[in-house]
Image 1 (tube, rainbow, N blue to C red):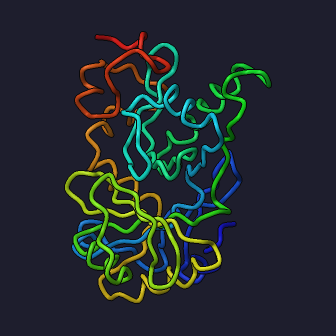
Image 2 (cartoon, rainbow, N blue to C red):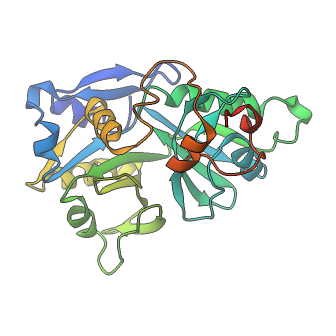
Length: 276
């Protein structure tokens, strides 16, 4: 159970178990009569992404593993982007949101059903050389007990989040910043999605209840579960329809590069297997 489990119970949440971690994700809030998503996005929605795919890649070899197993552009510290994860044959397993939070740290977030397979593949790549392999000096672990991931999205999301920032500015699309939400240290990223303003807040677990209740105190903010977040991403990400089927999906390189989730070159797993 995540840090906000009791808060979700108070709202009558239905839960969805994560098969990899055993954590419960909020599916929806039927007892609250969740608003229609279009209506809710006229203000803002907030979702706790605990229980979905949320992993920390860290260690001296973390940048090398990220470059090998993530097919998008290499990120500088303070950047965020969606990046494809490919099998050796070039088929696409998923496209998680990747945040470069430090010289030797990347955070991967993916609320879609593909997230678990993408992270499992990264772990397979990491361990390919065994204990003596070049990537042994990094770890890939669930981050749910470190910082709580909260997504705030909608027409009013920027106004809501900026209320906590005092003199600091909101990050631009694809930026990650270390901020204080009032007095609480946190990481804040603007999620690069089309047609919707969206922010990912990573907050310390002991402070997460205060932030959650504070967000819900805004009249324009509605709580939503994973089902609504997946619908939002399906509308906002151009590759969502292509990845709606189960299992690895074969897609052309030009299409993936056009979406910005695969980079030019052959220096990542699956590059040579991509169809032209």
